[in-house]
Image 1: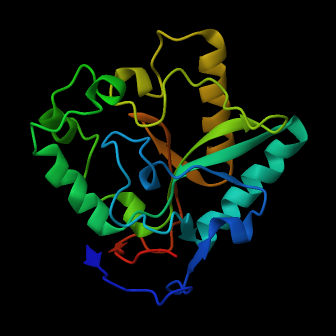
Image 2: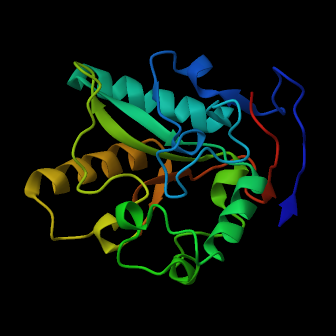
Image 3: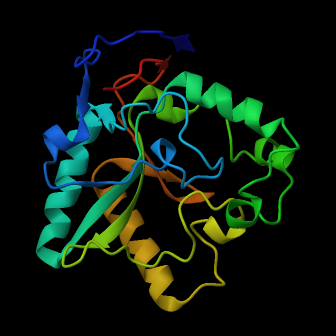
Length: 214
């Protein structure tokens, strides 16, 4: 594993990275870790500028996903993209604090915080820090409403597994559609999170970055 602590100058990004909305101007972005709407309950270190960034290769693949969805009246909404290593480090510190359970009922009701590490919901290093991993869902372009996937983003439990069966037929179909189109454009998912995808041919497979995007 190679680590990188590149610091981008204001308005610049390391070579190979792009702002997602520069590549996909009509993209809906809701960076959860730049807001209070996440499992910690506050904006996180590393997300000060609320800028969604990916490698150029991953961004262009997402552009192709958006283009295929558009004739169907659908699009994508991004919840997270590149994640600085400092944010990942914070997650591990947060998980070790048994007293801070502010958002437990909404995001991990059946788990004690240390289990988030044991069961692999929080990892260090994280693929997000390599710059080609994205968390996203499908939306209707008519009103930007999200398709029902059965759980919210970052719900930690078996209900979020891609093959979880105790959901409605429409929720299963929505998950299957998301998986199918992402895989068709070169992404691979993970069993535990229906929203999580990594570009299979990622350009930095062994490098974990720690710059703050702006």
